[in-house]
Each structure stands twice: as structure tokens, then as C-alpha cells.
Length: 340
Ligand code: TRP
Image (cartoon, rainbow, N blue to C red):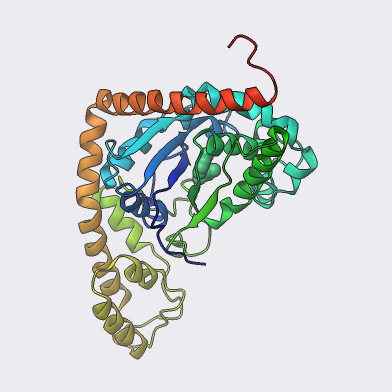
């Protein structure tokens, strides 16, 4: 499903688990959209380090070591801290407190029914014993969204169940209050279809080595393009080739600026006479051109971490005020502001 960019000014919250540097899938699926949304909307990006821990508590450095990488990725693609507030989840105590209050409004059975959580429990091997923090992360995500009073959440379709659970919580809280205190939120689905992994088989994942990170160096990028899945039956250059399911063409469709040129390449490939080496070379050049300035800006930011920390600290301070205000209203509903 595709939808248009919103026209009226919205309060937008997006976020990423800080469990690895961001890749081309993030770039086309969400980062580009965030760059265009920041001019007309009140946008906050949450670096979700607490949520990252819900399935990485045994290896916390996977989260902590990636916080600044993710911030550098944001800035490198053009997210501007003067337009978008970038904040760190663990530095906003209101989010953890709201999670506690909301967890009284959600049953374990409801959490176990959440389709995304259900499939993640399987894929992460948590079937026999799932960490309570993991099972309840939809509640913490509801805390994130409502704490900012966000009305619009740009997400991939895997996140729709989180928004559904958020709105259930919102309705319960509002009905307890007897008046609308929290806003329901709407999803803003990505304008582009999900970018396939370079092997064309699996979901993009850093451990599978089938992604292209925004910070990939020239050599890594070349190797990744060379290893891309094409048409397995296209054995000789003269053979007609198939473009459907040929990842090189999917990437050319997504990234090459000249649509007509890509159309001609496809025709040539289908006719026969165009080798995979050539199509890969064309794709590599196009991606090298895209990633070069991003990589350079990213490196500059990572060279001076104090600047990144300042950006995150300032964004977190602004966000602390906002989220504390929501916490205060929710505590009011439960009659838990005895001193003021
Ligand atoms: N669950 C999101 C992801 O895995 C990250 C996230 C955490 C988020 N809190 C959020 C996204 C609030 C949107 C709004 O990508």
C-alpha cells in the first residue's frame, strides 16, 4: 500500500533500534522520507537503545557501540538537527515509567498474539523462554509514541501491529480519563517497496552479510555488487536473461537516476548479449556515486564524536520535557501526582 506525504503539519515520531549501522534498505525505506518530512513537520527520531536491549541483553555492546553510528548515518544522509530532534531512548525516564503504567492495561495473551512479536520470537529462538522485556516491547513502543503525542508514524508494514497495540492503549487510557488525553496515531507507510537483500533470498541482516551499509567503503561496495544474485540460468552472455527477481535490476530500478536507460538495459538483457559483469559494473558506479558523499560526511562526524554526543544530548533534553509532560497527564489519570 502506498500513501501520499501528509499535507497538514503533523507530530512525527520514528525510530531505529541501535543494533547496527544503517544500510541501503533503511535509506530507501525510511531515511530519504525522513529528510523530506523534516521541512514541514515536527519530527523526532528516537534512537531506540532500550528496545535494542530487549533481544541483546547478553551482548549489550552491540547496542551501545552503534548509538553514535546510527546518529552519524542520520546526519550523513541529510537529517538536520535544527529541523529534526534526535534523541536517545534510555535518557528519557518518562518512557520507562509510562511503560510500567501501560503494562497494567495489556494482557500477556494480547502480547503473544502480536504477529510481529510472534514471528520474531520464532526467528530469534525465544520459543522456550522469551525475555519479559522482549514480549512487552510493544508496550514500550506505545510509551514512545504517546509520550511525544505523535500522530503520524512512518513505518514498514512489520510495525503496523505495534501501532494497533498503541491505539488500543490510547483508547483504554482515554476511557479511564473520561476525556481524550492521548492521541491515536496513524502509520505512514514507506513510499517504496522493501529493498531485497543482495543474495535475494533472505531478509536483510548484518549477520547474513547480505546488506550494503551506508558507510561501506569502495571495496566492500564493489564486493557486495559482484556477489549479487542475478539470473541463475543466464550462463552465457548471448543467452536471454530474466530481469524479474534479478537483484541487480531491482537495485538499478531503485537507485539509477535514468529510468529510460535502465529500461533499455533490461530489454537488452532479456534479448541476450548483455553480461552480468556489465550490469553489475553499471550498478556499482551508480552506488559508488550515491554512497561517496554519504560515506565522507559519516566519517567526518565519527571523527568528532563530541559533536554527535552534543546533538544527541540537546535532542534528549528537549524530548525529556515533552515526554515528562505526557507522563504527568497519565499519572494524573491514575491519581498519582500527590505532591503537585
Ligand atoms: N520498533 C522500531 C524498529 O524496530 C523502532 C522503534 C522504537 C520505533 N520505538 C519507536 C519506531 C517508536 C517508531 C516509533 O524499527
